[in-house]
Amino acid sequence: MIRVRRHWAMLTKPILQTIVVVGVAFGLSLLVSRLSQGLWLVQSLLWYLAVAAVMRFAWKVLEWWLELIIVTDKRFMITSGVLETKNSMMPITKVTDMSFLRPFIGQILGYGTLRVESAGQKQDLEHIEYVPRPEEVFKAISELIFGEKKQARSHMLEPPRGARRRAWRFARRSDLR
Image (cartoon, rainbow, N blue to C red; front, side, top):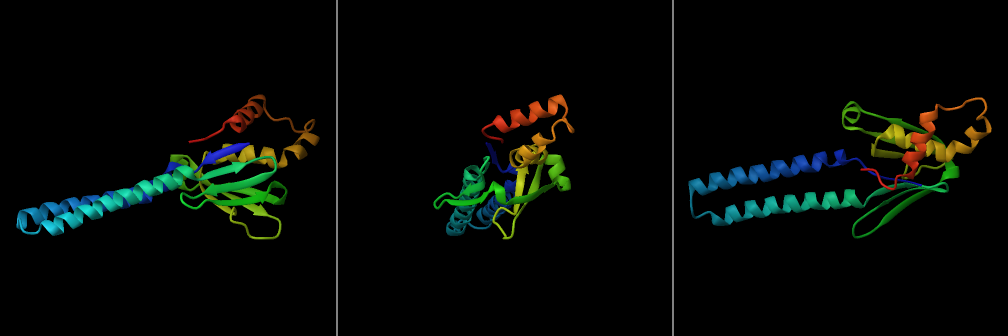
C-alpha cells in the first residue's frame, strides 16, 4: 500500500495571499492610527480582516493535511475534506497508462503531477497535482499496477539490485511528507 500526502508547495498561493492581506492591514492600521485617533472602528475592521485571512490559511492547511492519495493492489483513491469527506476511487484494473510531469519549480521543490489514464471514462483521478517525489511514487505505483507483468519477463529484464530494494522500502512507507 502506498499512502502519500500532497506536497506542501500547494500551500504557497494561500500563504502569499495571507502575508499580503496581513501586511496591508498592518500598514493601513499604522496609517490610520497616525492620521486620527477617532478611527478606531476602521482599525478594528482591518485587524478582523487580518485575523480572517489567517483563519482561512489555517483552514487550507487543515484541508491539505487531511487529503491523502492511497494506492493499494486493488484500488487507486484520493480522500479529502474537512466537514464533508470526499472519496474518489478507481479500480487498479481500470488503469491503462500512467505518466508524470515535473514543472521547473517542481524540480526545485520536489513535486510533480501524476497523469492516470483509465479505460473508457473520465475520472477524478486523471490529474493529481503536487505529488511529492513523483519519480518514486510513479515507480512504486507502476510496480503495484504492472508488477505481475514484469515478473513474467524477469529473466529477461532484471532491475539493478538497489532499485528493487528502494522500491520495496518506498512501498512500505506509511506516509510521505
